[in-house]
Amino acid sequence: MNILGIVGSLRKDSVHKQVFNHYKEIAKNQFELSEGSIVDIPMYDGENMDNAAVVKLAEQIRKADGVIFFSPEYNYSIPGSLKNALDYLSRVDPQPFVGKPAAIIGASPGAVGSARMQYHLRQVGVFLDIDFMNKPEVMISGVFSKLADGRITDATTVEFLEVHSKAFEAFVKKHN
Ligand code: FNR
Image (cartoon, rainbow, N blue to C red; front, side, top):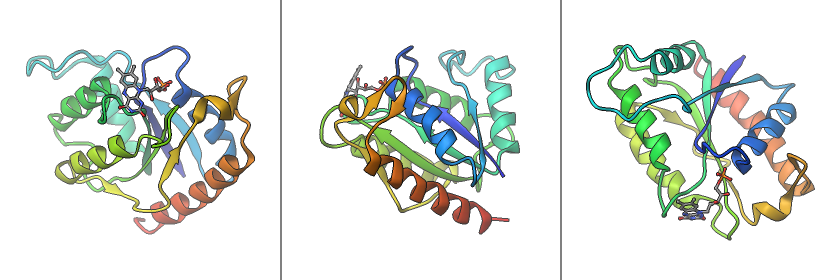
């Protein structure tokens, strides 16, 4: 089973990139997780639908058995970089997300763990026909104290991500 991870942060030291990297290892008995990058996607202007980064990501999404978004919350919502990528991809024909099983993993330094972003992303997914797994939800609070050297050091979070990867594997299998 091949799952595509889309990291919603462009930051070099992104905690979501670190969580993505560790989750890949945690989930290795359930599925292979590769990265679909939004880094080179330009701002959508309705013109260049042949942009290489957009075409590549659309194709990766189509080929994947499922998608997991690893994204921060910016100002109580979806980071502009990720929203722009979703807007661009929504105009690609055929739209790559239709019927795609997906999940969201988010974290924050504070207590809310990106929950508000997650519900906005689920709302966007309604129009894109993304089939989001409802539960378990992953909202990692106090993330800066749960990471060291690019790995999640908090045992409870690691265990929960194991549970999540098993649930997502079962969710994706139901689609096939
Ligand atoms: C944030 N951050 C943030 N955190 C949060 O819990 N709710 C929020 O609304 C916001 N808003 C916000 C806006 C902007 C522009 C930035 C740069 C940051 C903090 C954010 O969760 C934190 O910087 C994370 O480290 C971002 O994830 P990455 O980039 O480390 O993966």
